Image 1 (cartoon, helix red, strand yellow):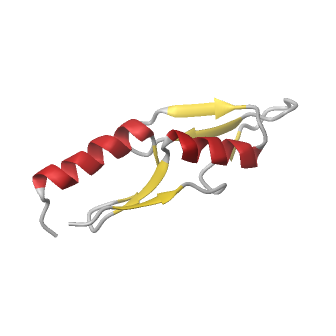
Image 2 (spheres, one colour):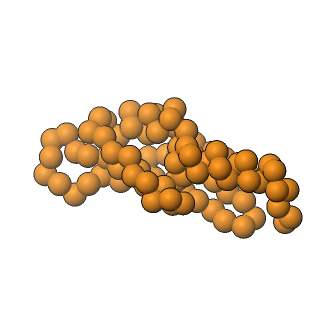
Image 3 (spheres, helix red, strand yellow):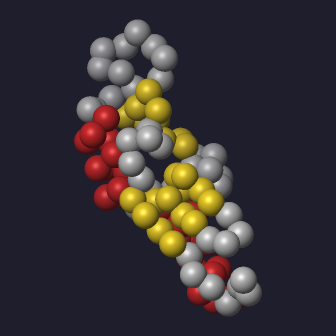
Amino acid sequence: MNLLTQNVTSEQVTTAPMRCVPPIHNIKCDCCKHIDSSRVAKSWFVTFSNNQGWRQLNSPHFEFDSVCPRCVQELTEFYQNKQVPA
């Protein structure tokens, strides 16, 4: 069973609809609903998120656009240890 991981892109990062300067950028885990936020430039926030371990996860059973580092680790270990059938 393969679990495909990819870096998150700017498509997964949302900008809060506030009149703040600089704007607040958010990324939300599709698994546990954890949210990370920052006021840095969007491109820097995407780089930061990837360096922290945020990923896109794809398998035959599910497709997540953004997953936090903790959930990435847990799902990866589950798929490696349980040998989930296709």
